[in-house]
Image (cartoon, rainbow, N blue to C red; front, side, top):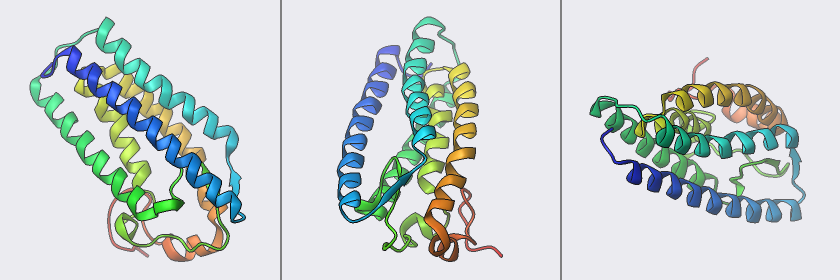
Length: 190
């Protein structure tokens, strides 16, 4: 491992703090959206997603502490770089959406879909950031079992969540973003 266990646990603690701030921002944005007639869908799978993300951080820590593995330093550096890219992509998406950003599926019928920022290139940049993060963060600390297990779990959640979100956003969303790829950056494809 390139970084010490202590440093890795500090990174995980910083991620927890970040998530707390994100959830607070999401609550404030949801409150504003509901005041303007927004509706929420997908509450059942949202609870599963929250549980998965909570267990993810715990699993990273437990595996690093109790099942330490020695990986080539290049693996940890690649993982750390991937996490930095994921964070940049996440905050680009959050900044682009502004008060529309949320961790829940909350749809305001009168709002047009965002087509600027990272949404120029793909439909779901924030989910791409999460996919990268769930694979990368465990590998920073050598937690390969967590990386594999939670990547599979996240894929299963996203297989439910993304179609639910796209259905909830409706025709305006499909017209504006439907020709863009979900995750892979690129220009519109036919």
